[in-house]
Image (cartoon, rainbow, N blue to C red; front, top):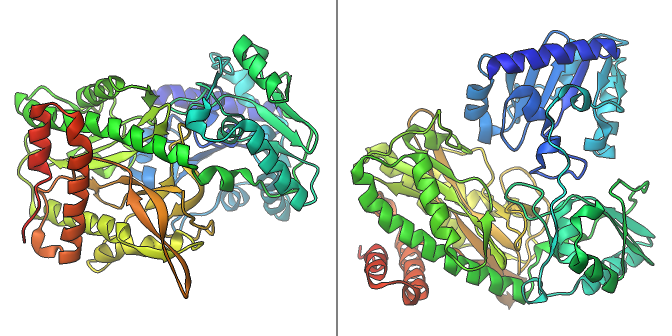
Length: 565
């Protein structure tokens, strides 16, 4: 593979010379600015070989570098070895920005190229302004992959489907009117919607154009008078055509309309607050997901002793158990089944080359989720497969303490997730331990598993938290070459009473699955934390047990026994 990357970079450099360029920037995005993109736009992966969901590759006539965040430092280092790319650890003080690096690499009068279709207007202007200060020009009208990527996948043309009102909880007409009202308040004439999950939410439609994300490639131009969907006509069957006609949506061929937004987009905030039908759908989906998880975890206990199971084989087993559940539509992201040292790679994904046998010792980090038509799930459990070191047990307990401390939080309506992030890290910080990724993200309703605008993370994210939002709770500790620990539940933010100081909120778990207690160092747990854990396990047992056979029920009863200090 590395020889292929070397050849691609050299071919690209010839392309740059022919077109008068000295460098080209490949982001992870597509024209719709999605986190996960159709294969057609995976140009950064094509040129660099790095397959993480976040990163930017830059190639000059003599150098190449790839920027990515802390989730991928280990994975990117491994994948880039033997290629022309050096790893730039984004977010570290010593790491230059892309434009700073380019200004150092290039001279006045040289030209940098980008595909302007996959950058926002703001991003283009920021890049241009910085480069101009060094006398370097920016060109935005080239896409070298269109010429050089000989087997480039086409833009997908998969059929779309209608998301029933019983799951969406609000008609498309109602959502359109809410957006129009927001436009009127801003004295705006219209808005161009390019984010695929926003279009899917607005129109109550779903697709399969992006791996693990039920969205479809399109644009929507919504004005005070009209709604136009720009989409390949092959994606619409008669049912979809009639549906769009009935809700007053015009259809035009797929292209980006010539329209510049001059108003803040109201859809992310609307979409993030789930209505009652969506919340009930989440609960049903989590119930089915919990049943699959219990069946899997019970199976794993005996399977580990056979000496035949690997990271990939247990991934297949869990996926098969989920697929047995009603309304299952697929995975919500590629499963992270990371044993031992692989657990330290935050977004590890086993391949035939990296796959390892599981042994009856150490920790297995299992981060997985599913798309059900009534909800999206995201859960992480770290499981003791046998004897553990003292360090593994301590790390596991610190992560559990952080998870519970955040879950116990009570906070004012409208604060930012950044303001409660430290709760999940406090016990770790006291021992000089930290983690680089965010603590929580929103989850879509049969949509993208990562959903904004709100987050819980240590870097400043001003989006407010409100009742009805989903958010994950997933602190972790990662020790390179040793192990990784993460415990994650998907939560729903709920009302928790009004005082003279305002309205308060709390987090209520949606995820239903036992948390492994065998690694816990109970001396480190406070009585309040133990009480929370016992109450959570009681809820898990009472909710799931009526849907389990006797053997699974007894297993779950044992795993959720009340801990007596």
